[in-house]
Image 1 (cartoon, rainbow, N blue to C red):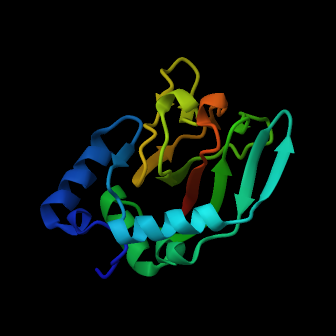
Image 2 (image 1 turned 90 degrees about the vertical axis):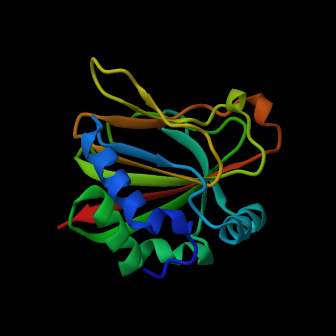
Length: 194
């Protein structure tokens, strides 16, 4: 594989096997991979994120966030090679990836809403933030009835994936005043299955 933007550790045969087993055995099926991108790719994306001029949108009972157009550096995520890598670790036949990029700053959030698509799907996200403290909020959380919430770590340059069941919903915690002027950039993807 020639995904030069990704940490080469995640292509090693032994690592791929461990990721595949870990994903298959977890319930729900999840993975969290730190140091996902190469340092140069991560730094380039952080620079693009800082320069980006997105459109801040707010619908009070649904979300407040900045929508930004995709970065040049993220095109590899929609490549056939990335789909192949994702298929290897999830043991699923995947045909396409859809991406959205959002930034979150003080007072931003995403709530669970009735209009949310309620279907089983493979979701992933990459977190980019130069300086972020857990006290700032902004965690991605998945909830389902009568189950513990899944709170994903806020770790820059990390990749998280979940095989989201139909009855599981996602929200992003309110970003509080501790964030100051810092921004959290989330590249979100959905991988469509054959």
